[in-house]
Image 1 (spheres, rainbow, N blue to C red):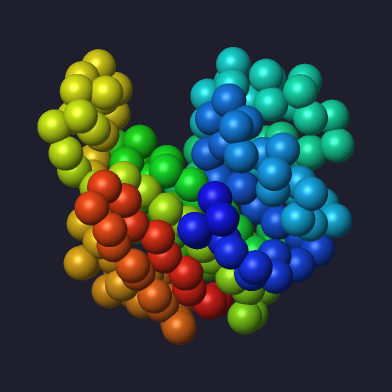
Image 2 (image 1 turned 180 degrees about the vertical axis):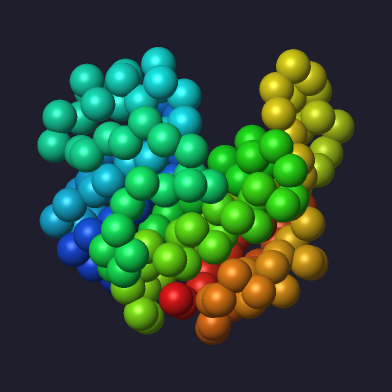
Length: 162
């Protein structure tokens, strides 16, 4: 998480997309006044809500966020985009994140790059690998500016502004 977020100011209203079991939720809630986590899996959403009663947990699909326009100062997506079942739905998710961010709001995140180990870990799971070389154009098409993508051997990180 430090490699992705660093010292970025996440503001007062932070959105976490796909917290899964909440491994990063605890760290994120310390970086903002109010954290909202959107999780598609109802069991995981319930677990995160139970573990973190001060976090607003929304059990929903991030490609159709049931949240108002321009609510959030920042959004974070940590190693979850590959779980979205198609490039088209990933792009829809990017558009939804742009919609719910305030003008100038920060969107940061990371995901894994393709490798044999990554493929093995997802044998019976959804895995639509995000190409870091194509990702800047995808973020720009979703409406973001100041796009930055940095890739290393097994992962990439990104930042962009609404």
